[in-house]
Length: 261
Image (tube, rainbow, N blue to C red; front, side, top):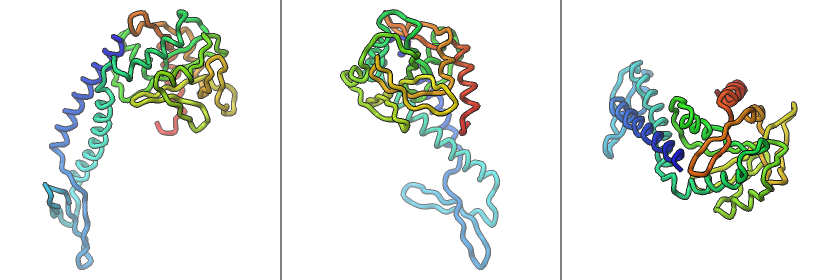
């Protein structure tokens, strides 16, 4: 699992560095919240914070310094960022040989037993980007808590396998998306199966008989099946990923359609 190991080591180092930088900056910023008191019709402002077990109120005057407002906003943003970093480090603090990664490798092996047919399955999303970094020299970009997504080419003509039963046998549980499609999860790992959504109207989940699976349809996913690449992720184990050009075009299209950019 050399590829997975390299990805995790790189990302752990990145987040450790980010954590040190954020904590150093937080140490230089004021903490607390602005409180207001009205006395004889006049408003007075205080900075309230805790020191040890005591509540401290620092008098600011009749106006709040603009620099203080700026610093308090910066602290709030950095505290949120620190929480994300801590969550990422907690998730990354696992070995690629641990129980989190072994099931992922088993899924890849099960879906790709006969080499790589055109009518097959691809690893897409952020994990594909990690493989671009490893195989094609793409600039490093940190991984947070991205879960693997598998895109399924339709009509599916690959190996017939009851993927639901297979995943349950290796410790996964079923979950249901709002549209009725199924995902699989266990502590630290969630796997989604995706298929292209076609037509103007939003489609219902797609049942794939040969996989005994109900997959989630997504717009423009068919772009990712254009000239895919097969890459090695471990000894004797390969997986198909989208071409880098298809990946880029798909991301640009999807980004423009997001409500929260």
